[in-house]
Image 1 (cartoon, rainbow, N blue to C red):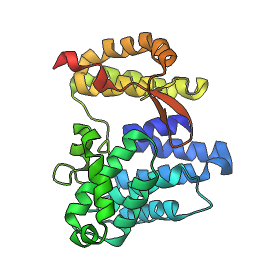
Image 2 (image 1 turned 135 degrees about the vertical axis):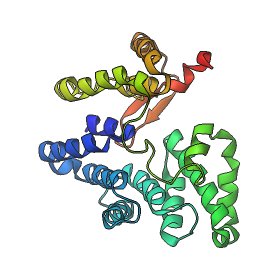
Image 3 (image 1 turned 60 degrees about the vertical axis):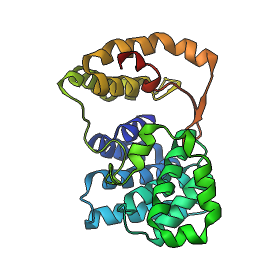
Length: 264
């Protein structure tokens, strides 16, 4: 499932669809709900907005977060957040979006995902005057944490700058300079990672870090990736900021944004 998790974070829907089928066949009932969530996200990431396939994917997400007592508790808030992102068009308020967003805001524990849910709720409350008037407590709770939202979270959650589609935006991006990094990561994930398993203790994983750095900085992503590999033991030893993933595993936060300020 770790490879599927990484493909999900990357937004590589084609590869994720294949990996979901493999995980479902090899990992059995224990991975059923997680695979169902990832397969629904493949539908959201690949189907046209408003299409029957898109609607079916949203319904699967909606059913997962509402399935109290069956889906894992760590998965339900994430499914609720993605339901809200996928169901809301950025303008028209609806009960499903409000319910899903409130559940995600109240139950997400991972700091970055909590910030995303809170920021999205901020924009939703601006669009839903009735809810804002009926739930001043909710508005106050959301606004109380707004100073902690990074600029990237604001941009992602703002319906004016984001079509409310899944983060990652579909197919892998980046200019021509990102091709070497994407090729290396693609080879690693297809040929090496399935054999040795996930061994990285950082978030994002080293392969995802390399990919993000390559997309953002082109060929400079190569030395940034090498630097990450050298720094990994030290960062793990210091254990400054832990991040709990939806599957319950713990990793140490070490995002690209903390190591490229010298390029600005």
